[in-house]
Length: 614
Image (tube, rainbow, N blue to C red; front, top):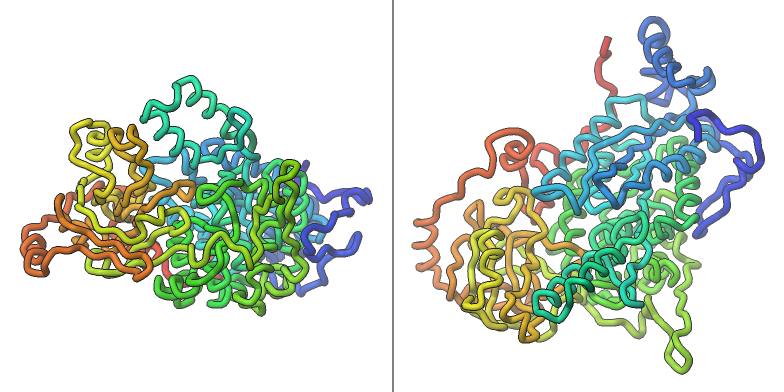
């Protein structure tokens, strides 16, 4: 599609409705708004003299006609497309659908690239660069002639990073995620991205899966464009964007290759023009009630622990008070309804067919802040009032398949992310209860400590490793400053000698994160982290550790006197780097309980236009 306004061909104006979203009548445009109210016109395209000449003339090099400079809203399409980010590799096509909608509504779409964070490729971890992406988005939106923004995201950190940047500018903003892949296939069964990797690797290590089957599974897991189709971090954050009210209702779960993904993108393009006319901004949407909705939605879907860090960081950008204690309180007692991998059976494609997030929110409606405003211009309660939960028939004689359980028959209750505290994690740690083994939710075991993931990887295959099923594996120096970037290494592989005899879970504790596609009894985000002298740095092999999830407790059974001696002997590790972005990050990153944002980025700067460039 070319970057020129569409013709009056009626096919260009026939936008099918989806998920109850407001669809303007055929041929309608957003109501007029004074050009002087639009920053793009007042400070760029409507200027007289030399500067107006410069701004308009150079844009004409792309073939734009006079009409685009007439004071219509300029919509920045902020694109995290990259071939190095496989999850986002189709976003250029999504952008074309967004542009069509913007043109139809009378806006002027301008697409631009920002840093793309590929979770599967980028080292040492995409999380190291989430805040850099947020800065890229923030400065691009503020410094250019933009009145409203569409954020095209998908892979794990691209969604929260883009939202953080846009929230700091506070121009009207709407999120369009790229959607999940189709279900993976292997030997006639559905397999989930990430989750299958962890499971099949353990099976291969234990000698129960051949190299040929391992290779066949590899080729069948990722079958289409899109992000992970498990309820990993990408799917979780897409659902969080919708639960926060930043994404059109019902759009989070649409598969990437489904035509409805492009239809909803076109609707988003139309809607963002209206949002500019209404001056509906992130600060209007991202209220404390919106975060309560997101936390409860995350508990109901069995979402990723990574959502905790990202929600905290987003809240910090808009000035909403949000703590780990709030998140733990809001998640308690929320029924776990979505039967998706890694905690359940099914995948995101099935979730969409079953009704997606609107069906889940409709089931837990009494727990939802229904008056929270959303990008639709309506409340969350209005958006999901008519949502339907859909079961479908299984094999003959078998009960119906329920991807989304009714609220009266949940998979569990209070199975969301729990916040633990104690002398091992004074400022908190988290555990995904739905992914943990019930037998380990209350556990006492001896610690086996590793100071780095490399040290653990060298030891994991040792047949003489002094470890049994009750051992508590402890990983240090993998937090935001220590690694740097807080990588997804917290779900340490089960030692080979134990995997060979059928052990499939152990208690694991670290200041790292884990992939949302992973599973197990894994305690994460221990704060303060080891690299800054937190108690995790003082744990020694042989110490007893007590975990009690119901009591929200994580305790190191070592006397205060002994800990004081160890603290006196502790030496901070050498900084991982002395230059560049990583140095800036290490010097300024906050701890996990504050969202791992940079301390000087917390809060909003706004959209004030800077001084002239010529």
